[in-house]
Length: 539
Ligand code: NOJ
Image (cartoon, rainbow, N blue to C red; front, side, top):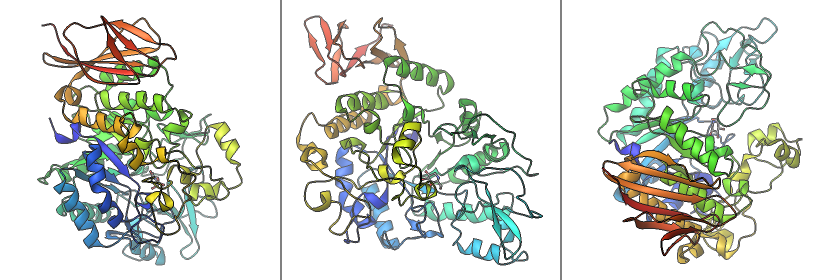
């Protein structure tokens, strides 16, 4: 089985992981100094949010040079060292690749906007307006995607923010340039790319108006219908599905067998179109169902069954509880560590790739920075929306709050920086930190460590099919993982009441948490506990 189907991914947001030079911003040297800790946790693959040269208006998702390191984070030598040191520790490296758009300060765009005759003009999407916007397309952030440029009296298109102009993939030179960027990094040995808003790569060739819709708010797994518009002509185009295959083919020749994981959204049908009918498109896509979990056994049972049906082998589902754009899941659980253990156990024991956002392993909480004071450009756009209102509506506006610095220990600034952190650290208790949690056997950090290790050492957990079981108890989830004659049975109690189940003869406890135990001839499962058992399957 290919390595990327079996891996686990840990996302680092470089701004907030570890500062080494006291400027209050995380950097590559800082990450280098923490690699042993990441390895100790059991991480197999590290995905880095962008650290390329960038004006930083969207904190690195606005790139002005794809083959340079932003001086905030260090140098190319630091980066080479980082790749080498990660590999030395038997982990792999995934870079974030923003193919859809550049920064408006990228030399390509500066040339493109300088005149209609410039050879780079067609690197971006330009249209005449005749006094009005070229069509009705709304961007993913809810504004018109068209931006007027006085110099040439035309509009350029951006499917995200206006300082992030979209590249024109109908121009073969854009593809060539971007494949060159991928090659640059693949030759340095990186093991894959996370593709930012890959659902947006192509736009309709004849620029037809989008149909209207009754839906206003997008959700993490559905941007296709939002802001009263069906994004028929500016998202999820068949050309983007096709392009996924081209990129896959292009990178496949590299000996490290790199992979692609796409940030796309939509129905399972859409996700599958990105993966390719013969599993020849993107290797993986983010599946965001867990971002809006309902903490009930039934939700998780349904999800397992749905993924077994829709994403059966050779496809591999992914399980995401959070990222740098979403409210942290611990806050969605009201800070309850017991529940966090159940959720993360589900994430690691299901068939698929678990993707952990830095800080989840210690229950790092959200900030409470108002939209008005936000540094995030989305917060700036919505600065007059009070935080309580956006919370009430269930929309996430100020992404600063999920990007707060990592909590390492209780010395100055939680060990993150000796300077003034770019975002506030907040009050830090001993028990919130990595250093304290490493010492305590029943901490969340040690639970994550056990999960990483358990999965790493078990072919059944990495490859085995899933069979859900009926427990007749609405709060108790039970499923089996099956590979040949080997099985693993998982019990997760989502309820407030203790549950007990008859023991499975001949089974062996591989892992337990939350007070779960084998007592006489029953498995005892206190509220929010879990039990993982090795079982021999009947022939
Ligand atoms: C999705 C990224 O996850 C987000 O952080 C970024 O702002 C947009 N794409 C634009 O690149």
